[in-house]
Amino acid sequence: MSLHSLMVALAMALIFLDPCPGNAAPPGEPDDEGFDMENYDLNSETDWENLDINIYGDSYDYEDLDQEIEVGTVAPDTPPPANQHTAENHEEEVTLPTLPPAPVTLDFKGPGLFGPETGLGMPTCLLCVCIGGSVYCDDTGLDQIPPLPKDTTHFYGRFNKIRHVKNTDFINLNKLQSIDLTGNQISEMDEDAFRSLLQLHQLLLADNNLQVMPELPVTMRHIDLRNNRLISRGLHTEVFKDMSQLEFLYLSNNNLDYIPTPLPLSLRLLHLQNNSIQSLHEDTFCNLHDRNFIRRNLEDIRLDGNPLNINLFAQAYICLPRLPVGSH
Picture (cartoon, rainbow, N blue to C red):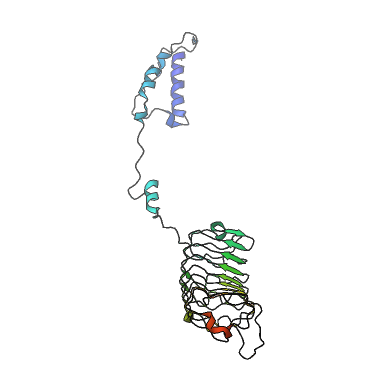
């Protein structure tokens, strides 16, 4: 057998004995790259230095390839299914409408260094000035009394626009000793606005519009009601009788038509000028049942500016160390 015949037989055997049939050309398809076995030289050597690579396939111009690749040729994203929401649509669906801010409420028992908050949403001691137990809210445009810290001893709310003093304004203020509301527009007070203040001894309400005075604690020492519109029937009967510590009582420039009696023995000053008082009684200052009685503390009585001739009522102040000031 010749060498050529031997090589052909060997090639056919390899084809039929190949363990991976998939590697062979599919049946029915011609093999364009078939080997030329007749001209194949087993003894030849490949000249790798002079090898022409173009003989193994088409040549490529890589510069042209770079130009062909453009951003615009990128395939568009596949659109989502119709029943699937995008992230933006989902975010729009769950967006809630903006709600208005919650209203500020008054808290009479609020904790904190500066006390509870006011209707303006600020702690009282930022709206006003707090020094020790004193709270100064003078000339701050208040139209109501703000909730005060529980340790308040003195409150100053002068020259504001307060019209109404409510029974909740001074609640739970067991240390409060002095209230000054001079120069407001107060025309109304709840009956028990001051009743629970067991340490209150000074109440200054001058230059307001009061006609009626609520009940006051018996601990009072200083009461100033000048320049109001007080009328005699607007005062409680024997309103000052049990105030055993009362020393200063200012009732000038009102509409009183008689002196509110009985007056406590502790009283040192009584100003009633510019009212409507027309007469005095013998027991207004003195004791009818004790002719030796002397009221030593009451040294300053002002009755001028009233339709009253004090000379006609000498028995009414015979027990006084000094005569009242008034028309003769």
